[in-house]
Image (cartoon, one colour):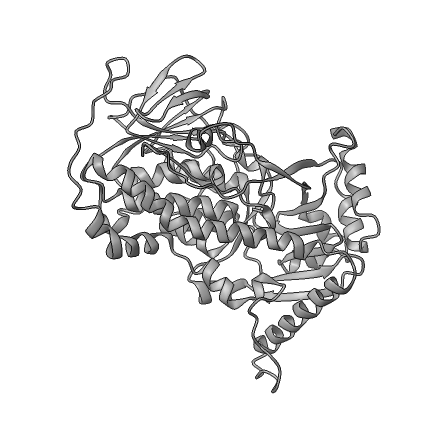
Length: 512
């Protein structure tokens, strides 16, 4: 963009071209055509999914945005993730529908199986019912494909700078000091730098490390042509589902990605790193040792994996606030509410954050409104993300129950919900005298009330609702504040930057 200052390295995307060449059709207008009367220079720290989404939304709201990325090149590694309707709703709204269609798989159902026998414990229909019930589809996708399309969406409008590691900042100005010694000034800083966030330390007032959960996850991707050649595995591809095998202290999730060309596996297990040093060359053998005795299909799948990557799963309690006391720095995504993978909502929560932030800042008309709008963003998002963190942690307990009375109770609940779902799918009435309520079911995806809350959420609608109920009376009437003008090398006004590590997803969220 002509009014952006390009200083340092301009980012490019390295690595093989992922599937997906359909043109992106960004909306001609977002936020009901609104653009901020006062345009800020904003820095986003971090070029992950949340950082790219925040940058795009803030540009669409009328601001100038620079992303500061610590890595030397932009890229996203990992494997499959799940994108639920509350996320796909935003992606489609932003013009990514055609690009998604090239690379996603729409799962027909969720199925849970018993670890040692493969017996079906739970079945919840997804497929077209997701769009019917919640207004948007449920997809499986490779993280790299999603990251690439988000990069392609934002890049034409955003100044993306790589090799820009933030080593210090003064959030009261605000400014950011890079490892190179350069000082970057901004009107506003958004910290989207992931689980091991630098910006979070300035919000909470000191070092703030995540906590190990005691779990880790192996991840692997298998070409589906191999599965199709095996009669025992063919059904995993021919009938695409999100399949979970539940066992003591462990579970495995499997689903198709990349238009059914690859099968993604996530294998959660107790983390033994403190007991034994990690050696990549021994990864496959150690992975298989974690799942001895699991059903034959699992043994076949594991035998197809020559090596694997392992992620230590980390957690962080909810922060007291996401906004620095001076009101010029706010956190987003995993930097303020990291999600464990057991509910597949990490990417969704970060992108919802970005949508709310952009919507609110499309109404900015005075510097005095910056801090109140940041607190409004936190207020809209805090309970939802905290509840989603709790829901994810609950699934960790449910999935990993040891064999015994609690596991048997879990399985009975799941089977009851499955029988109700199957009768409903066949068009049959519920059995008289039976409790057809799914509220509180051990299969959280079968809980219709929870699903409406989780998947029916529309981030833009929530921001619009807040403005109608609170913003018009609290924000519009604030007096104007004169802000100083900063210059970088005498080339123009300072920019607000998003900064951090684009690979933050490696810290958490192997299931998406």
